[in-house]
Length: 101
Image 1 (tube, rainbow, N blue to C red):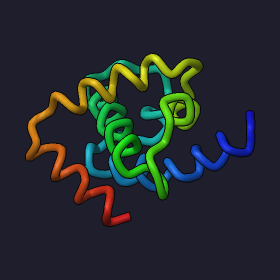
Image 2: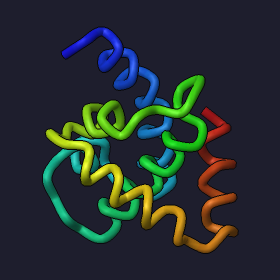
Image 3: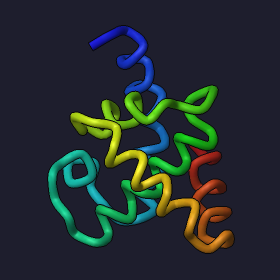
Image 4: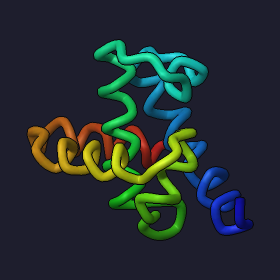
């Protein structure tokens, strides 16, 4: 793993922590393989936020996938697509939560 990927993982951690607290999801469940709807929703929100605000800049899909412990970027791409389809009020609330970190 490149140092850029390590940076992406470190940059993603505050967003992951904030969204997990907000959604009532443990970080270990978030980073695991589980498919519980609340965990899946938390992952989608994190991906959307990281694409928009990143850790000082938009993160790439491969970087986000690495931060989420995924092997390929396709899951991150799909979660970002679903994030963009969410109600704007929910996305605004998630952005406020992420900025508090």
